[in-house]
Length: 445
Image (cartoon, rainbow, N blue to C red; front, side, top):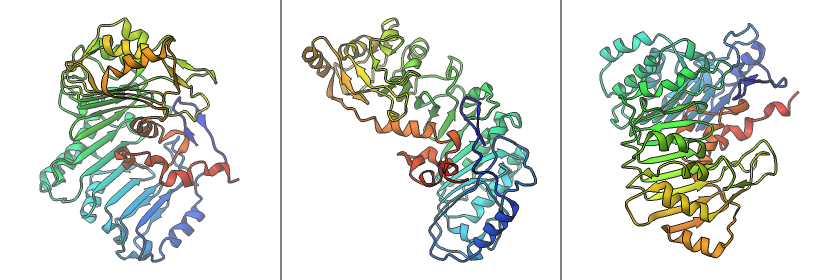
């Protein structure tokens, strides 16, 4: 059982919690030696909709004899739905480790134990409810600085039940702990604060501003229809998309270099920002989906980017060089619409909705576009060509938009996901265990 994004339960009766007998057999089988194994991924069904675990659902605990209890060639490991009693020898050689324990309680001592016993670890992803956060400050005082030499990426995913248990400052402390122990001064940390559970707490949307220096000074903002990501040079914060994601008190645009937004966010940007002096790249995702199947998205229909931009002052972005208008990448969904744009409307938006210093843009891309519609298509295309040094129109969706869509849906309806997917440069959420495990219950009874 897992909740969907709207808080209604989607129940799959085919696959349930693993029984105690099955767990013991499974743990015993894993004690067989596997000296040549390089990658291990174990995904156990869990009842994430409930905090209380019944007697019939006790997560398997891997023993110290797992994989023969001796160091091997293991480099990558993803464990979900089970627990580690300790860091057994086969895990000490890992360079990548994703850990989603059941239950999700993880203490600072557990984290330090992982780092101490995995000296080669480069990427760490943990889904957790932080236990005993008061211990972090004393640990920072006791432990030396910069003793882990290899770690360069950390993904921290807040468990859905943690909102009522802990304060935002607890995750601030955890970020501080990782920066204290890592020798790499440029270690990148991502904190995922999304919650698709039934008790969605909109107060979480205020968390990002507490995780970085005041005020929030992002270099990149990606605000799609499914999630919002704030990034600076060393920190990324993922949060919910369902409410206003930025106000004049929570962010400044003076450091913003790259912006990806859904077109429904354009009025917020135009009204709040006024001037984005360092913005170089702007991508706008057109809302090409609808509850009515087989309806075409037309740029002249309201409400949309072109209509709202015409009613507002131009966005002042003197450093702007790259602009992309992107049709929704999820064209395979039943509600995905063909995206048909008017080049005349695009020209008018660039000329009157954006104010930049150079005579022309460097690149102007229309992606995910099925067709264009203009009374005089030749004249419209000639005018379109004059807007940038390099212009293109393609039906294929943008790589970045596909990546964001994959990340936005990675936890919907029981999909298998790993915390480190946050750092993916492609659609890896569907390239590892997801293809093998997603929908498993549909085939088992």
